[in-house]
Image 1: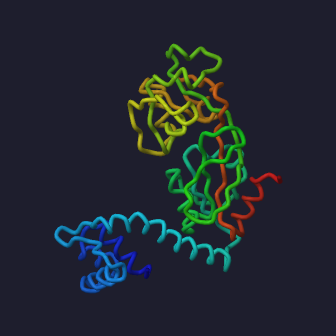
Image 2: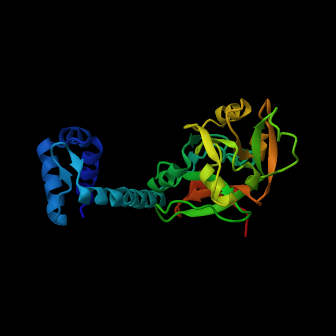
Length: 288
């Protein structure tokens, strides 16, 4: 398939309009219609109903493939550009909200850094597409186990840190005086669902056997301080890395003692990394 036709199809489907897609892509409406017709002829199936403009069943299936395909093309271009020329000065780092540990912060170059806090799922795609030189992802894992990341492009991942995991409780919570907590004992508690600010409930359920951990409030943001304030105010429990949880006022951080899990941080980068990005990789990744 011609990627230009595929990109036009995705844009029309997203905007539900041939005219809006033409405006965004810089084509005439007639050119957009011709491109969609050419793609439909190539595949031998109608992809879009015209009034209203919605994907057909075949179009829906093509959309499932189109995103990864277009991202992979963008990743290939970015990879070649990296190898052709990478400046020694300047670094764009995409990081999850809780992935920037004191050790990593201390290793950053003294100038020329742009830090972008993104949703965890967006970070590998940002590195693959070249909008970030490096990525920092984190999550809940057994000690030394790698994180499970989406397969968006040929990327390198290396562990750069593991820390204890704590449950953040209001100071007046009945369990606040415990020396340690078992996740199984908290399955029926009230939890905060904050997939991009704390450690995700999906990973929490997987670690504890796959059941319970009912969310009572969902926080859709990346501000760890806001999440911590919600937990301290009694709106639900959350899991945070030990150093982050220990610094929250009016709250108590109790370590998780069972199962044996850690907050793991991994560096994500493409093979052609150079300059300041390569120096940071070397500083953070310990020799095997």
